Length: 357
Image 1 (cartoon, rainbow, N blue to C red):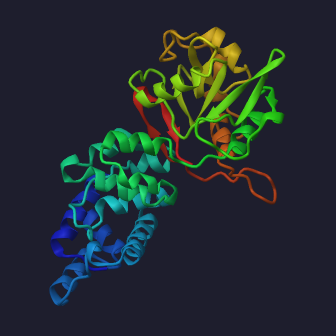
Image 2 (image 1 turned 135 degrees about the horizontal axis):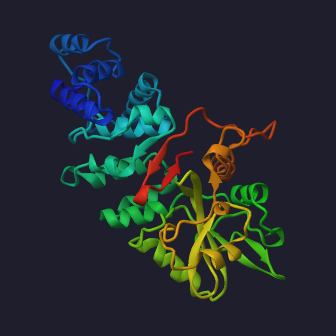
Image 3 (image 1 turned 180 degrees about the vertical axis):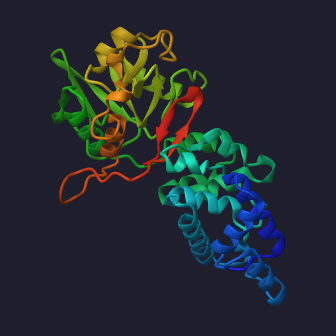
């Protein structure tokens, strides 16, 4: 893979900025990702080869995509990332793209220690004037189920649609609640096929039950500007009965040595309040937390709502086990969870964190 020299230099700068490494190291790593041993070797090829490899726009989509994935695989091997992070990094710094290589910030130390990508930093490295829409659409291209996003014209609309367009499997959430909480689930009202804004199953409560709705988004406590989540809550509340929403993945935060993991939000027929991962059923949590505690820190909840960090059993926080079950990471033969050695995460509003699985 041999890009024009100017593109290679710009890609090296973007790689250095993305990983916070020196420019010299970035040049050598980029060369290796392009199948050259050193930067000098790449320069020699540039000076002695009559024709550079074609840019993506000059190739068929399949050929360009295959080359990008080879580039991403090489980056993965060099930096020990995961498939998602390495492909996103490759798309950002791609020296064969018609647009200027961009920064996709990854803290390697945090990533390998189970930290990860700060979503604010990541998006901060993309210049809207240089084609943010093009960049985001290329990221969505990796997921065929998101093909409906191609006709969206604004960043806000794109972001909203992407947040609710991921495929969901109700069985994973049912199994996670069944095995990791003491909530009473009603399996007679279970829908195996997921439909947006439709009930997936019910939770039993005081002789009756209320529906559970699953969404491929997450909202952080204290984030009062999430218009999409407010719209979803309004539509569910309009149905007139109690209900629980579950996020695609829990958001968690350690406060005073206790990890609080938010699964979603509960509607008691009048107001909404947060629901956390613990044995207390959502309706009881709602009574104790209240609708006014928007950030879950006014006041900070008691220890019974979370899990003490220094008392974790089995090496993994319960929130990791919960999320692993929701995405069906069980081994088909043994039934045991097949957890990765390292788990990347995204830090969002207010310091709330989501694992990437």
